[in-house]
Image (cartoon, rainbow, N blue to C red; front, side):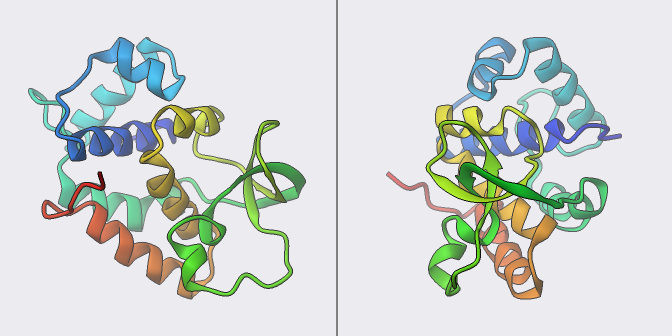
Length: 178
């Protein structure tokens, strides 16, 4: 039922808001944060509800199925690939928290292309073109989406570490950073 990659972005944004103990803001505010139109945000949420990844009345993600979909479905439904060098925002293993785990070497890192970015690397198309602006508006979303990219384009060790961290982020016991 999930037909667009932006649905994954919306679902993870809903988890970020839940971790903040913030009630659903409404489609207009969510669309402002994600830089996606309110109608597209609404349609994404409806697809997530139909897919049983979000609860209808509270518009909160159902964490177990969301984890399974993100880890096992997204890399196949929306595989990533590398493009040419560009300026952007570090993602996958070049972003927190994986950047601390593995030595980076001299290779150019994966980046989401963005003119205001501060890292030069090889382009990985984000799940939605507005992801760089969305993570500026909702900084906690950055880690989620970078981990998803590690699943989409990473090596086996990157994917394993991303799965472990996503398990923590998508569990009910996750402490909220203050």
